[in-house]
Image 1 (cartoon, rainbow, N blue to C red):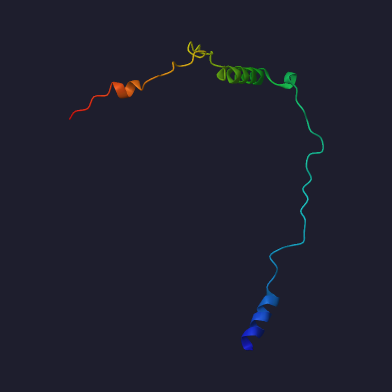
Image 2 (tube, rainbow, N blue to C red):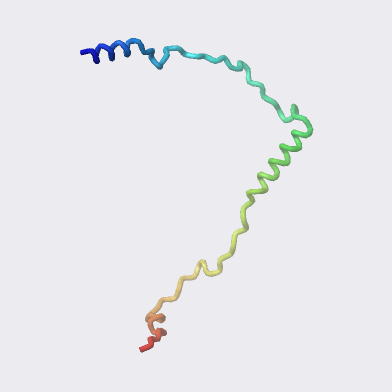
Length: 89
């Protein structure tokens, strides 16, 4: 009996870990958009250099020509590999 009474008292004395409060943060009301003309000359040069190197980094490789693409292999009547095998007895 004593154990249950102590346990119920400690549970009632403990505070809840959760709160019923909501924190609202007020943000920026207007979004400022910059155009290319608003940038400095150095920023324009860096942006141009970055885009130029990025697009040239992923150039496609030239297509290789495979001359035997349209030809099928010959039909084998006999197993040539088995005919050419030699065994040491």
